[in-house]
Image (tube, rainbow, N blue to C red):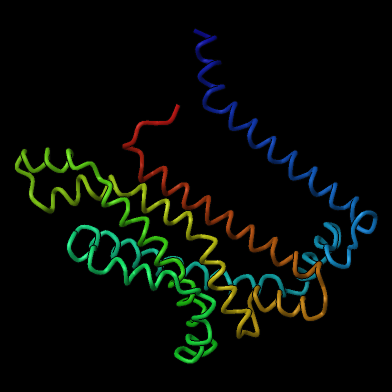
Length: 265
């Protein structure tokens, strides 16, 4: 009995512990190698060094620069992500449920998706100015198409046998949508959300790079103009942390939504 409990514990927690320990060791090794290589094998003027990056983060944290600009960018990312994800999921679900409408509009959606979002930034400045609204909408547009395409794919790949079974049991169109299509398509929705997280950051930061006097994109621009590579890398570290936190949140949502699915071995 004890052996069975130990085996169950290892299956549940042991592998996760090994994975996280390996990640920490790998990250630490890369940081140490980077610190050693700076000014020894590579020019730190172009790559900086981890100690300088940590110093810049400490300096910005001390004078409030980091918190003020990070909060602005986080708002743009979160608002843009939520707006784009909600619109993409709803439009994807509704449009993919209507076969004829989806076939008609699919080429137009793909054409709009193919437009480089960087090219939209000047147009958005003309339409919405250089305030937060422009960055939020640019991030939302970037997220929208990724969530839309994955949601539509999830809806269209639902097992037709399940739909027919519900209809044979007297289920209405609403029952099919709510009890079959919606749960089965959540995998596509969650995939779209995960894929869209870095693009929400890209949309917001691009807007700040093009026209802004605050935010993490502005810090990147300002640091690059002064050839401050430590400042650029420090900002990239903050953006990576934001992306990681959003990924964790989406993962938690995914676990809760997909509780009805069998667990992986």
